[in-house]
Image (cartoon, rainbow, N blue to C red; front, side, top):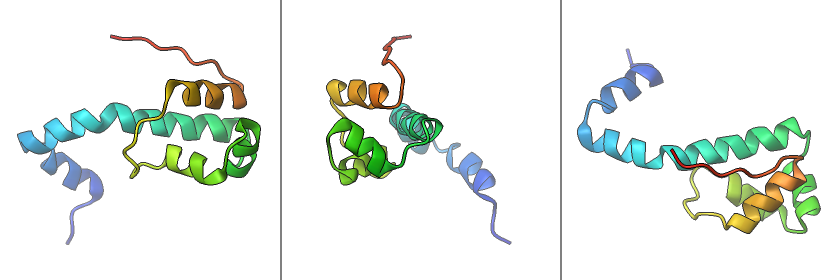
Length: 93
């Protein structure tokens, strides 16, 4: 029987190299998941959000993609936040 994803993840994270890379990527994944939640909460499709931001749907898709590793500009995040009815707030901990 194959392990569940959670079992696989737990076992994989016991490897220090895997854990280090997982931790390094965590903020990026967290941001992208937050962007998707914001868009969905605003009841916007990627196409509608793109129109509000004066850009193409493919740019929104790339921005939200968990497999796309390019970092967005701060101005893009501000525009995304405004288009979904939010304000961008940065903090360091």
